[in-house]
Each structure stands twice: as C-alpha cells, then as structure tokens.
Image 1: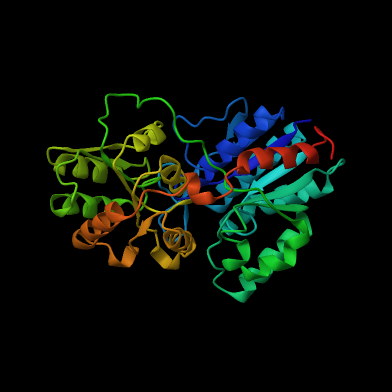
Image 2: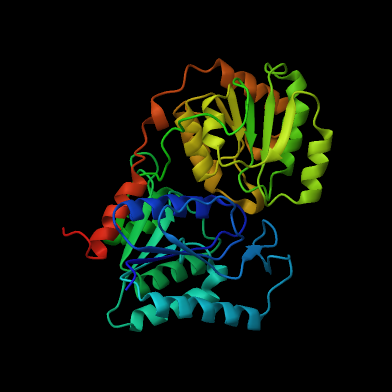
Length: 386
C-alpha cells in the first residue's frame, strides 16, 4: 500500500501544482511514500523530491471563464475522453491502494473535475481498508456563485471527507472570510500555516544583474495586460534606468510571447518563467506581480518592495482579498487590476519604493505549512503515533 495518493489539477495557472509539489517534498522528507497524480499540463522542472509523479492525460481550462475543458492541444474534450481519463484515475487508485487519499481543492473548487473525482471517492469510500480522505485547501476560496453551489460543496465534503487542511494562517486570514460556511466544519478543520519555500539561497543560474525589476506573471495564461503595462510604465517610473526582467509562464501562447519579446527595448529582458525565480527576487530592487498564493509568498521571502496587481477576471475574488490584507500590513503595494495602466503602475512603483523597509520575513505569517501538513498526514497514515 502507498502511504499517500495526492491528486492535483491545475486548470489555468501553475500555483496549485507548485504548492502540491512543496507538500509532496515535505511528506517525502517525513518518510512517507507519496504518489502525486497531476491532471494539468506538465510543468517543466517540477521538484517532487522522492515522490513519484503520475501524469494523467492533460486537461486545462480554455480560458479564465473556466467554462470549457480542453486537452493539451486546445481541443474540447468529450464524454468518452472524460470516461477514459476517469478510468485511468481509478486504475491508479487500485494499483496504489493508499492509506491516505489527499485531494487538492475539491469539493471547494474544481467542480469541473467531478466526472472523475466522484467515482474516485466512491471507490475509496467502498475500499477495505478505507483510506483517510483529506481535502488540501489554500487560504482563500473564490466566493461560490450561488447558495446551491455552497450547499453542494458542504454535502460532498460531509459525504466523503474526514479532514480539511487549510494552508493558511487563521490569525491573518481565516477561511470563513471568503467562505462563511467553513465555520460549520470547524471540528474537521486544521490550519497548517502557509506552504512556502524558504528564502532562496545561492545565485541565479546565469549572470543576472542585481538591482533588477522582476515582473512575474505566474502561469502566464492571463499575463498579457500586466506585461504590456509594465513595458509601457518603465520609461516614466523611478526605475527607468534599472534593468527589467519580465517572466512569462508557459501558459502564455508562443505567439504572444514572441510579440512581447520582439517589442522589448534595451534594458528589458522578456523570457519564460524560471526555476531560479526566488534567487532572482533575492537580488532584485522591486517585484511586480499578480497576487497568487505562491508568488506572494516568494515575494515576501525576498523582503523587497513589491507591487501586486491581483487577478480579478470573471469576478474572481481570491487574489484581491489576499492582496488587500497584505497591503493593510504594509507588506505590499496593491494596484487593483481594474485600475491597471502604465500611468497607475508607475505611480504604484513610486509608492512601493517610498514605503519603509519590508517587515519581518513573510510579514509575520505562519509559513510552516508544508512540514505541518506532512506531520498530520503521517499520523493519518499510521507512520507516526499521536
């Protein structure tokens, strides 16, 4: 029997699978045998430590509306395709027979994946011995769009799950701020702290200069407006003479990426996202980014001035709430996405540079989430007692 079967599906960005990789590495360090099942597009350079990666036929969302699933070639998937992938997932479960089934986000997100997750959960529920079934959840939920959806989330959790692990710090941002019904699950909920990497040590993999402005866009799927605004804001910003490095995730199309790279003036480098992102930030003068879970923690670890432009497309609220609370702590300068322009971004840069030095590392947040998650899962798997 495998100790842990960990399912994660990233649909747009790569934050979910990056956080899962950090947790998988911590579980491996804790002596657990971990199989990570990924359903999204492959992520180059993903470090799982000693955990095993099993890649399902990749799926992603067509766009930020999350209204359609497409395959790796961008083609819509049909019911036979979904049925085949669900069977693949059940075969993996049967082969691994895990002591703990850890599922990222579902049922509080990833409803599009219920075609394969509900059959998986039914299989786990009926298994002998039955695994301990756990939901791995980030700090903030996008608000459910209807009371019916919230009821479905609660009913599905209660039907299948034994435990809810929230990867956040309740003293900063309790889950009920974004999902009030979380209070009803208090007895099954454990906060782990944020899942963060330590401040990067070492040097970048090439001769990147110090004092750069690093513009990062996560997975890159919705990166275009931020990249365009950053390139246009540079000449009027206080850091016009500094080198700027713009990092575009692999989900930004090659065509758009080439257009931005060709338009980059002297002193601006446009390249794909890099595994040494933390080392780049540690040497940077300023960070400009969205406000995704992983990116924000990377920026806080670097202790540099930061402008965050939280993604808010299609009514998304997750990044905006996290960014607002960090802004109230003085940890970042927030520029709402609806106000993004070259002029407003240059002004936000000036505000960020005028702030006092960054507060203590990670703005005083509990960031022991990977290790604490590993401890909780090890107890559930019977690896340690208590």
